[in-house]
Structure formats: C-alpha cells, structure tokens
Image (cartoon, chains in turn blue, yellow):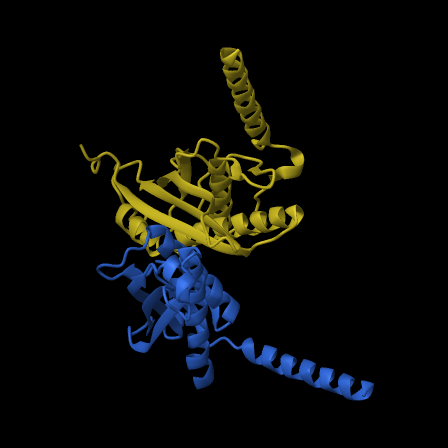
Length: 167
Length: 216
C-alpha cells in the first residue's frame, strides 16, 4: 500500500514537472496591455481600470506566455514587433448586483456581473489575433476590484489556451 | 439631585470622548527603524537609444500628490514608512538610470534637456484587499533650456504583490511592491514613445542656434 502511494506521488510530481516545463515557453516577445475603456452606461471608477491594468499585467507575467510585459506607450524594437502583441479592451456591461436578492433568492440571483471584450492584436501589422469575451460574476458584497482580478485571470487563462496550444 | 446625576452623566461622557481621542492619537503610527522601509533598486533601467543622444538633467522633483504624509505608505498594522521623501527616491532612481545609459549631464549648465518631475502618486493604491497594489505616477516636463520649448511626458508604473498575514512579510511585500512599481514607472518613462517624441521635437542633435530660436 505504501509503495503504491509513493509511486502515485512520484507520478504526480512527474506530471507537475512536465506541466511546469510546458508553462515556461514564451510565445510572444513583448505584450503591451492598454488601459481598458468603458462602454456608454458602464459606471466603474477610474481606479477600477487602473487596478485591472495592473492585474492584467501581473497575470500575463505569471502566465509566462510573454517574455516581457511592457507598460503602456513603451517603445519596442522593430525586430521584436512581429512577435509582440497589444491588448486592448472595453468593459461592455457592469451590473452592481443586489445583496438583498443574493441573500433572499440565492441561486446566482443578485450577483455583481461584469462583461468585457479583450482584443489581442499583433504590433507590427495591427492584425487581430483573437478576441476574448469575459464574463465575471461575484458576490455583491465583494469589492468591485475583486472582479478585476478574476477578469484578468480569465483573460490570461484564455490567452494561454488560445496561443499556447497554437504553438 | 436630578441635576447632579445629569452632570455626572455628562462628565462621564466627556471623559469617555477624551479617552477615545487619546487612544486614537496613540494609534497614529509613528516612524521607527522597525517600520521603515528603504526603497532602493540595485539595477537601474536601461534607457532607450536616441538617434542624437542628448544629455539630461533633472532640475527638480515636485510632490503633487496632495498627500499630507507622503512618507507613510501603510497606515494599518502599526504603519509602514519610507526612509526618504518619494520625490527624492524617484529623482535618484531616474538619475541613476540616465547615468547608466550615459544620458546624464555633469551639471545643469551642460545639459541639453532639463527635466522637471511632478510626482502624482507614490505608494500603495486601493486594491482588491487580497493583495497590495503599488502605483507610481508622474509627469515630466522636458525643456530645452536654449529654446525654452517644453514637452510633457507622462509615466506610470504598477505592481501587484501578494498579501501577507505576518507584519514582517507585509513589510517585505510592500517594499518589493514599491520597488517594482518604481522600476516600472522609470522604464515607462525612459523607454516610452512619449519621451522619444519629446526628444525628437526639442533636440536636433546640437544643430540648434543659441539665441536665434528663443521663443518670446
């Protein structure tokens, strides 16, 4: 029994090692995340967009999909432009949610919700590489910036899925 | 008799308010060696390459944050303080970075372009509560002292550091967060397209004729 457990543990560690090695491949040289904008009627504070920008950059760095995550408006060498991307996006919908509905009804009612579209374009020729639609729902009592964190994680995850597999 | 009890009640309330005030004053964090962090980056940021590399000089760094306590980074957990003014930290780091790229003038007189930094934010900003959100934001006014022409360059740097429970770890994470956001802001400034355009506009590689181009 003990030997089996040890073997299983070793196998798990082996898989973890393989997946970690797979994660370290960078697909793009640089990625520039721009501040997202809000569509008409979206009532989110400028601090939200600031925080989301920071979170997105942090998540992109963590994903290791990109060699270097650069700041907004930074210059990139012409040689690297072809393997560089720019991420722009818009928050299309934001619903504050209702703590009362959430507590009384439950089952997802009254949740705070955020929808955003993120476009990934190649820096050299501005070609659209992919568009991601993100929908995040959180408890209405949570800080709106928690949504930014989850949305950034979702975008990084989707990008990894899209471009990591293509590679 | 009734008056006396009312007076007693009022006195008791007054004493309670005074005690609470005194306690609130005592809770106000004060800078001590154990709650002070030193933001200093070992590696400067390599600036971008310019066609006609000018020599810069930072004339001044002005605090425009409107923060009454710019050295207080975190108020909770006994407070975390900076060892120097944020303007001094930013100025020093920019100078070090310019020096590393051989773009720093020896003095203000020999500088081709003068930079005045207006610091709008240095420290932690409101985040999700699960982590620390470091932010450094400044605007630099780049000026050609010979012509008097100026250009504005905005720069910002952000960083997210994980939260911590122990005070020692909080201090460590906050310090790393500040250093990372400062580095990010400096890189954003020195490698930014805006600085490139400003230099292209203000500096033509020493072919400017002094005196003839001064604007009224």
